Length: 453
Image 1 (cartoon, one colour):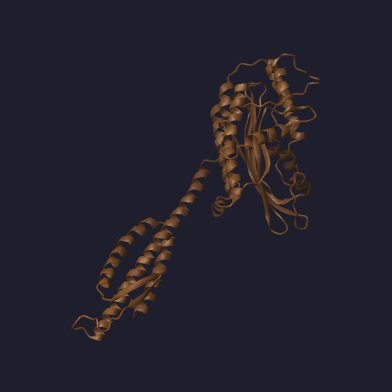
Image 2 (cartoon, rainbow, N blue to C red):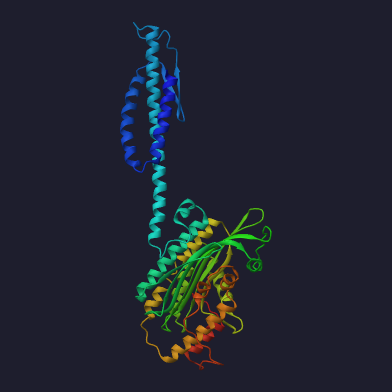
């Protein structure tokens, strides 16, 4: 009888648990069940405690009844058959009480998990509401893969895009145009652009999430940086995502800024994956302002120092080397930080560093825009700005690896790749600034990079 009741109650508990799991109002249901089961269990426990020489032991969701020497120890006047009925009834009550109680704990635990998962999903949905556009990847897929790095990085770059665009809209007064695009080979992106607005002549903040197979040309560029990649039948499945921004202001006293943070994941012939992060932030002023240089570099250094004391000095030197226009013998600007192929000390720690870097893009630049957006300037200063932009274009088209990788990737969106180019620029034959001028001072800094901290 006890065994039969145990089977029946177990089955009932399983069905109830299943219904509880799929219920949308799980918290209310759990409270009602809690009160009901507590009342039932207390009654059963009372009956069970009055039975002499008996105890139960739990093992997960089962129960084991033990009777220690009940023969000869029954109350006077009770028959052996009556005692058996009492034992059977008490055992059944105990089993029902235990299983009901175990079912309650199961349901409570499942309810907690459902609520936790629902909250995480709600958090992703809530984040998406604040983005400039829906993510490239379907939100349901991001929810399913929220623990994977590709999903986490995509949410981070979408969040960074929104935060930076909102900050720039506030200082400019204009609105970004969010332009979604798709890549037939896989993936797509969201390019947000302000053009010929109040403060910015051209401001672009672009997110891309692409996947497919690397071409031999693109793979060769990665191999030249020390990556040994072995594909299957000459193909390398990959996933690449990142955020890239270049801001070209109208006022020559407001500096140009660029940042890019990215994640690559490549699957090799044996199924193993190689991954790495890269990126950086750098400043290109038209005129030197040492206070601005200090604020910019110090903000980046503070972010780097949270993770490793050598990050800033190493990545600052790397930035000066990378953003170097070799045929001109000068750097593109006053630097910042730059790094590539970051795959240590662990994926989690590397991602944490990237998060710290993306958190600096507003505080290291937007205060400089507010500071200089209303500065007066002359036609000669505007002319110098246009000439420096010419140098910016030369670097991007000749040396920048991101541009070269994008142009070499099938199905890439050219408009988004070349978004970094200014709306206007100038090239004058054999132009040299006047000795002792502010233009000459700026050129000297570009030819001889300095330490700003």
